[in-house]
Length: 457
Image (cartoon, rainbow, N blue to C red; front, side, top):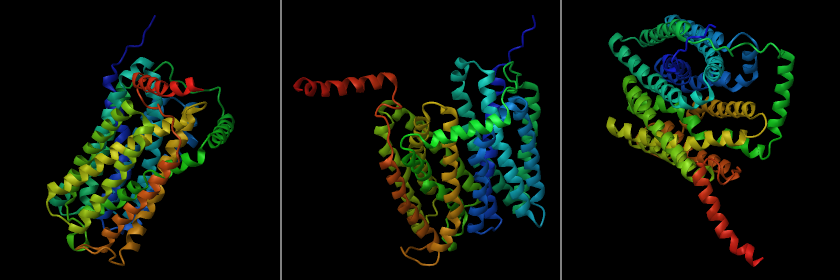
């Protein structure tokens, strides 16, 4: 009897989840910095890069077809190769006169390939590993996805900044950066063709047809919108991160813009350190502590503190815009505090999606939730540049800098009201998210409080 030689999960999980994270951050973070440096207006930059979220919004529509066409391993390898080609296309297109249209085309294709890779890679992970190993290695996959976020938002932007300084050519610097990233993905693809195991269970589902998929999708779609409290849940998914969705498009230009134009005058390399490294590490730390807090006290009790943590630190950007400090350490500290608060508050958001998805068709319903999550980032992000330009006409709040940034960040603070309204309206079970032991303690405490009333009755 021939037995398949077991490949250690350590041989492929780290590289698989770095490959899952890097394209996402290249498409949604690096593009903002690159187009800003290339002189694209804030309105156009925010609108055009906002459209790049679309594949993650609509991926539940085509995700079932990954199950019936070929294997998850085939899809994973295929998407990695196509991502490498798209990255090479970006590197080449940056040297052409029509670079904007061409690079956006390649980035949109990369977004589609990356979203499909997410579907295939996560499915492959579940097919190759037993349930015990899935739980054992979930921390590994999460850690290496986070490493990808530091590389994508910090390391690669820092590299591009240093190349800008050494080559004195912004297009050439970013062309080299994306060329190196493309070469890295070709290497990842070659490595995975050798070391990605071939799970016996990884077979296309021949019993399911495209017609059945369409019918099941329709039924699942209907049941999702029939869930209790759907209106307040959708409002929460779309509005909870409203301030951050707009900040993501304007904070990098604010950091890069000259002091005369109201910005902080950082170099691209400094933005890679401040926003992409220090900020990302603080965000991850906030997420870890947020998870510990919810496990201790439950989602419902943590919801308001986390909502306040996500929104109120945005006022630090108002302070930075008014004072325009030139102390790099002070700027990094302000960004770290804001990102820590966002990471802490974002934990409640992700756990609520899991809570709302519970019940029949929970996997499909969770996919719908993540689609609305992406939509909640996409639409405000697309409008952020236009809002900035509109608010750049009147100096309402005073200060030394350009009124656009000052007014915009005060607008961000005003938009926090939408987050608070969304939090106020949602329904959450009291014990959800708590560890079993903590939940039982709370239940006993509640029973001890209620029991005298029951005796009186």
